[in-house]
Image (cartoon, rainbow, N blue to C red; front, side, top):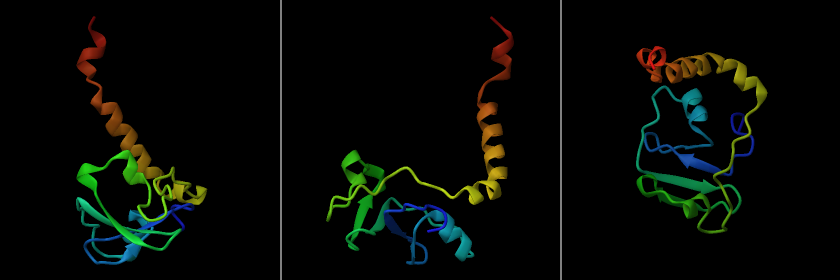
Length: 109
C-alpha cells in the first residue's frame, strides 16, 4: 500500500465489497464515500484468512488476527510524500482543535 507501508490487513469496504489497505486507497479509486459500519471484515496479510470484528464492541484482544495472532493494529508508517498532499487537512484539523478552547474563558481569572 502506498499510504500505509506496513499495513497488516486489508479491509473490505461494506459499500462496494472490495478490499482496500486503508480508507485512502478506497477514496482514491472509488467515486463514492466509504460507508461506515459497525461490523468490519478484515483479511490478514500474514495468514491470508478473513475475519470479522464488531467495531462497536472493540477490545484490545481484537487487535490480533484470530487465526495466526498477528498484531494487525499497528502504528501506520506513512510515506513522507503523502504528508505534503494532506497538509491542508492538517491545517484544518489544527484550527478546529484551537476552536475548542473557549476564548471567553482565557481572559478572566
